[in-house]
Amino acid sequence: MNQFMNNPLSTPSILSGGQPKVELSVQSFEKWRSFIYDSCGIYFQDNKKYLLESRLQKRVTFLGLKSFDEYLEYLKFNPGRNLEMRYLYEAITINETFFFRNQPQLDALVSTVVPQILDAKGKFGRPKIRIWSAASSTGEEAYSTAIVISELIKPKVPTLDVEIIGTDISQAVIETAKKGIYKEYSIRNTPPYYLKKYFKFNGSAYEINSSIRDMVSFKLLNLYDDQGMRAMTNFDIIYCANVLIYFNLNSKIKVVQHLYNSLQRGGYLFIGYSETLHGVSKAFKVVSFPKTIGYKKE
Image (tube, rainbow, N blue to C red):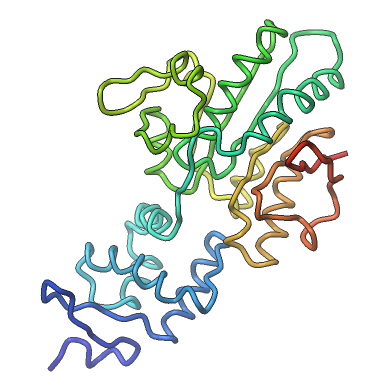
């Protein structure tokens, strides 16, 4: 009997190499959509069914499983499910970023946001700024921030204590970020002056200087996880770019509330070009900067 006959939710097709491929049925898609949503808040629209199928297929094939439903059971009940959840997140998320991707936000940081925050904190004691790059992917955003602070702010405030944290749901990209080694694609928008001063070319890749790498720490974090988010507190600036576009309204509301709670009074949240908090949160004050906007916690 055909191995797929006992699974009415799956039908076989043949890959070019002759290996059976399982198709994601509508019923199975609904199960997976609910499971992923409950786990991390990412919501796959109906038109993303094929995308989800292609992403999950890699893990189904690797694990030698017969169906998407069998993989879902594996994630729910197998002793190794915690590690496999990491692989799942890596499979379903897109990590697209590069250095100096959002220059207007960095300009606002240097010209207005950091000076304003430092002024509000007063002149007593050693000044400190805490910055969080949420969904930092392979670290380019966090390192870009470290570079402009080192180049444009530290010379004016030599005693400034800067803490920059990058987080992501994918362990693989976190490990890449910690290494600080990047290909041509990642540095394509980097000003030549910064590239020469803060990177070392080894013949095939660019390695960021230890002085910048040491300014940033990275760790694994699910923005949808209540317990994990409670530990992220007292930040002055949060970047969370191109993340909300993957959530439905309820997920957006939950994550943005987490981010709001993580900010200190007077702190700023920056999101992606194509994202907005309209209809998501009224807790922030919208602040306009040249070619970008920020959301301030008052």
